[in-house]
Image 1: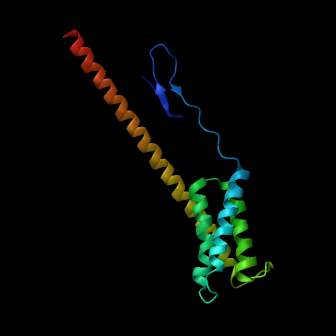
Image 2: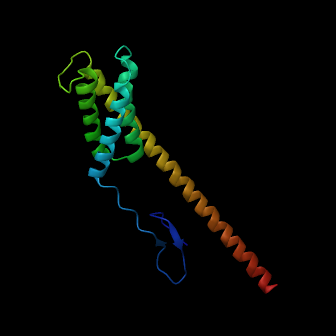
Image 3: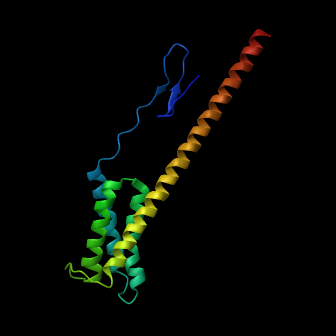
Length: 162
């Protein structure tokens, strides 16, 4: 009995040619992911705006954390590019300049861009690792359940013929 893991296995009958699988869900559209990421970035900027300017580390940490959390939650690299760019724009315009004016700060902006890129990459890696572990555990549980069902069926068959 060969079973491919493309989705959730429902049932395998000897009369069928292949495993019955649920179709893999359609991924969330990129635009929806970008909108969700934009909401997360703006909410993080509002939280960061409440932190006094005397604490720049805490003030600038909220937006990269939102970008990293978005990356881990969605795993959508295309949407992440837009959300990371939006995170830099919001941080530059409202946390550095405070008036919505965008300008390049040679001392602060390159480290901020690198932090956003690194946090996005780490978020993608963490999210992908979590999804892989979750899938392996689900596969292991399904195999264990299948083995238990087979064992129960064999025991019932032995009792029936005994």
